[in-house]
Amino acid sequence: MSKVTGCTAVPNVLPLGSYTYIQAPAHSATAVNGTLTKGGLPVTLRETEPILREFLRTLGEVQDDFTRRWCAIRERPVTVTS
Image 1 (cartoon, rainbow, N blue to C red):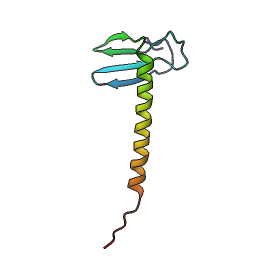
Image 2: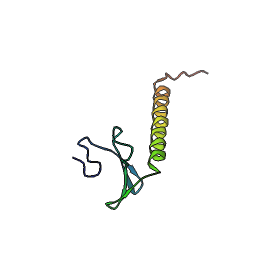
Image 3: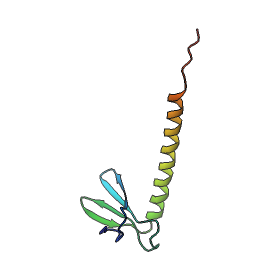
Image 4: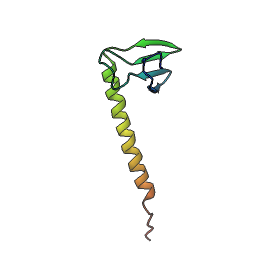
C-alpha cells in the first residue's frame, strides 16, 4: 500500500526537475490531492493540483502527437530527384 495515497495501486509518479510529483489516484475523492516532494519532504497540493494534472495531460498529448508525426516522417521513403 502506498503511504502517500493510501491506495494499493501504483501511483503515477512523475519527475519534475529536482521535484517528484505523485498523482492522486483518478478514482479518489476530490479531497485527496497529489504530493510534490523534494529531498523526501512532501508538500501537499491543493488548488494547484488540477492545473498541474491538466498541464501534464496536455504535455502528454503533445508528446504523443510529436512521436506519431516523427515516426511517420521516418517511415516515409526518400525520393531523390535530379
